[in-house]
Length: 319
Image (cartoon, rainbow, N blue to C red; front, side, top):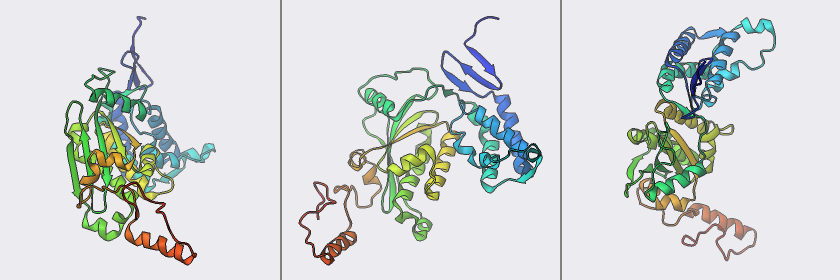
């Protein structure tokens, strides 16, 4: 047998020169058809569900976010420890049905893209971006997902804003919009995490042509959204649903979004904050609004204290 750097093992392709994994298209088509059939049936044996989950877990090195996009299916195989239970027919949960439909529609398209065996970290990409800004070239030419941009997002009181910076281009692409009336009426826009998370999804949709099939460095000043985008959220249904939407969008269009927290002043400097506010930039940075500040003063007065400093102030927004 002649030596080779490219091979297939149990339905998984790999290349030791380009250091990439991928799923063969014929295997992806068979799997997508199977998911469609199971979705139509609405039920399956525990054994059939376990087979779907097992296939997805095996493909995890080759397709992005598989574990996060199959949690409903995984949950349905939990606790099966007796031989007779494997042939028990169960109804799919709503979450599992949504996942089956997603894989039925998107597996083949996702299999057209390869996944690097070693993914970069957010910190690595910050260094790479600084080098690109200085006029350098990609450090890993020919990789499937080169770093092609830096996305900065912000969710303001009445809308969202984003800037997409491209290598070698001095001025960024701009994206912004107002919140929908129904979201305002439902009270969603009063929640800071919802605004920040939804602004990421809207920004990716706005810049899809520039971001498709590439790695994107993402700056945001909300740490809870960063954590949710990386691993989902066990504490917030809103953040977890937004993370699912973002993972599906990124997987469908071959986008590797590497999100990381940056200070609010950095988001202001890079232009996203001003786009998210009808009144323009938040020059004061972090601070308390007048109503909350009055409550702080009233609390201090009730306790017999006199405030001589503003413990919540930055250098430019003290009360």
